[in-house]
Image (cartoon, rainbow, N blue to C red; front, side, top):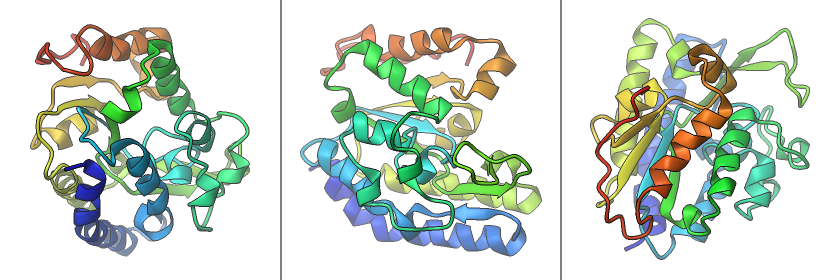
Length: 261
């Protein structure tokens, strides 16, 4: 059994969940633009699974919040902007992402501009482990990207700013929590003997019903500045999870959370 085939099996149900949540958001708050990966770019995520999980199951899940306009909205692969998608994963998102609203991976492909992706991929590169991408699966607790109109353009020129499930209000926020928990249950169906690393409080809370082994803060510059933690300190915490054990065989159990979680 491999995760690529598992995902193909549950993909129709995942799409139904995502479509229903997209419709709910637009019904309650039409000012939000929703980027549903099943509508324009799931083939890029499938290529990621085909390359790295077509003959194996992940040993770790790294779970984040939701896609951002400069990053995973452009690639449909969590924590991954177009530059790192091509240079590190070996996937050119321009070949798989369909034209959709403000999605234009060709504008981002020549240099890394998504700050969270930079930090995550710097940490991975510094570990120097060529098995990392075939052992660690990137996921988001809330797979829909969301934006609202902004007065200042992003680096790509789009007048959009990121919106997260934490920004949703009232009943929509509660529906978002339920959706994220159901999505994580479904997307991890069929997995066993894996560990979960959550990045940020939202991911931690939504992942509790599957499992949580390690919690780190989300590596966005805003989150790091709020907690007064440098990018180097965050990378050290991230690398420690994977470096102080026998990475492939997982002999050492992972049971403790970092003190700052």
